[in-house]
Structure formats: C-alpha cells, structure tokens
Image 1: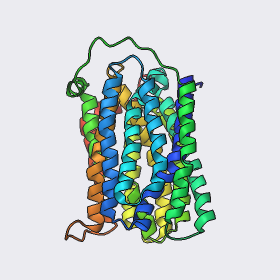
Image 2 (image 1 turned 135 degrees about the vertical axis):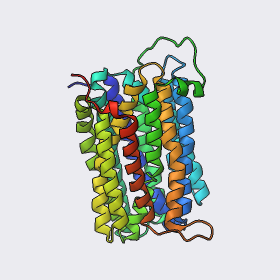
Image 3 (image 1 turned 90 degrees about the horizontal axis):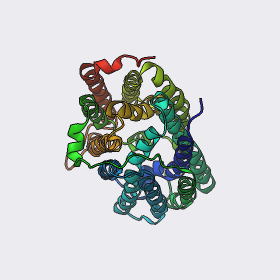
Length: 404
C-alpha cells in the first residue's frame, strides 16, 4: 500500500526531529536531579508547565489553521523554533533556565502539531487514515531509537557506566541535537506540499469551535483528558528506574528498547484500526497501560522496571496514532485543525496537574512527605480503569467495526 508523498515527508521530518529530541529530552530529568539537585516536585513542575503551555498554543494554531488556506507555514515555523531552542539547554544552569528552554521547544511543538496532524489527515483518504498515522508514529519512534543510540554512545565515551549524569555530558548532547533538528526543517521546506483547501468563509471563535464539534468528539475529549490526568510525564518512570539502581547507560538502553517496540507496533496497529475500528485498539492500549503502571508500582528491582517500560511501548503503539486518527473520524473534515488543537490542548493541559500530582504523591509537597515512589503509578492505573469504563458508557456505539 503506497502512501502519499506528504506522509513520507512529514514522517521523515518527525524522524529527524525525534533523533534530536530523544538525544536530550529523556536526559532532562536526570540532569535536573543529578546535576542541578532538583526534587521530583520541581521536575514535575518543569515537565508539566512546558507541556501545558504548549497545549494552549496547539489550541490556537489548530483553530487558526482552519481560517487560512495553507497549513504548511505554521508546521514549518513550529519545527524551526524547536530546532533553535534545543541546543540552548547546554547553557542552562538552573531548573528555571531548563524550564525556559523547554518552554521555547514546546512552544514550537505547539505551533506545529495541530496543523501538521490536520495536514496529515488532509493528505490521505479516510480508508488509509489509520495506516498513515501509524506510519508517522512509527517513523517518529524510530527517530527516538536513533537519537537514544547516539546519546548512549556519547555517555559511554564521556563518563562510562556511571550512575549519575554529569553536566558536561549533557551539554555535549544538547549541542549535538541541533544538527538533525535543522535537517528536519530543510526536509519540510523542500519536500512538503500544501493540500489546497477552499478559503473559509468565516470562522467561529475558539469556544464556538468546541461547541460546534460533534457530541462524540466532545465526549472523547473528556474521557481522554481524564485518562491523561493519571498519565504523568515519563520522567517519573526514568526516575523510578534510577531509584531502583539503573545507571545512565541502562536508562538510555531501556528507552531505546521501548522505542523499538513502539515503532514495531505503531504501523501494524494503524493498519489494523482501518479494519476493526480505532476505539477497540485504544481500549486495548489502556488495558496494557493499567497493567504496566500497576507493575511499576510494585517493581522491586531495576530489571523489572526495564521490562515493564519496554512493554510500555505496546501501549504507545496501540494508542498514539490511533487516537489522532480517531479525532479525524469524529470531527470530520470541516474544522479539522480546530479539532486537533482541542485534542492536544486537553491532553497537554491535563499533563500539568498529572505531573504535579505525581511529584506530590512520590515525594510530598510543603510539609507533607508523600506516599513514596509507588503512589503515582497506582494512581495512573486507577484512572486508566475509570477512563475505560467511561468509554464503554459514553462511546459504546463507536466500538462497532467500520463498514467494509
């Protein structure tokens, strides 16, 4: 099955961007904890604020992309801003400076994500939508594999199998990350073709766009937002692995294996969703997630965290691409950019309280000492179960397989 040119180009750009991002982003929690001495609550704040502010930008960029003919300019602009932000992490000397750079990177992601996803959906027939998003997610996660592999080599050459990450090693990796990020921008500028649409006659305000969305789409946003409230940043899994005794090299190897599984599952899962329906695979992914988070809560050794996190790639492969394709299914073609903006905004805005809750449950806040490392994962597993029950109650008709 041949996919359109735009799908290939956007996948190549995402591959290169994730080479850059995963060289450095997965090491940020270790840099904050090991080099800057930040507590888990602060790490949760950095991750949560950056993602949540990014989500507000996604909301605006998706809504705006429906009001103009071309979705390519905001897509390219967002990738460019992220590419210019990442190497600045090499000069960050405090958690506040890390937050500022992360904000710039996530701002760029906020600008690009909704119009890019809408352009992906615009570029492919509905019958191939799952395959297209699955292919894109697979390329994205394969880029993460390459980026993590490069980071692993740099760590090994500069500090060996040390338990903690050094500032100098992190700085080298942050500077190297600029190269693939800028190549991604070049690929988009040269290769991406705009899918021309009729100029919109007018436009609803942002809240009006939400009210105009189909009821099933609004219900899905509510349920996915609830699920995300328990899905704290993966930084906490990385910290859990280090807390169980895993070295920096071990953490990078674990992340690399996770992304290999993610990449292997995403493509077939997308194609399967075109045949049996996306909601079934989303629910299957949530079930996998609940089991893995329960296991992370109970893990007593580093190897158990490693095994569970590698299996965590199955959840991402089943859900990430299919959830985005499901947004297009529910929202329809008109207002598609606004629909993706709303989806990413709800998910991202839930990330801030999710990360703050996780940090507080783990290490406490103020004078409260918290419940310990297992608590965030128990909370996440419980909310996944609640979200799955709500899906059955509110979106049962969507569970029927699509017509042949």
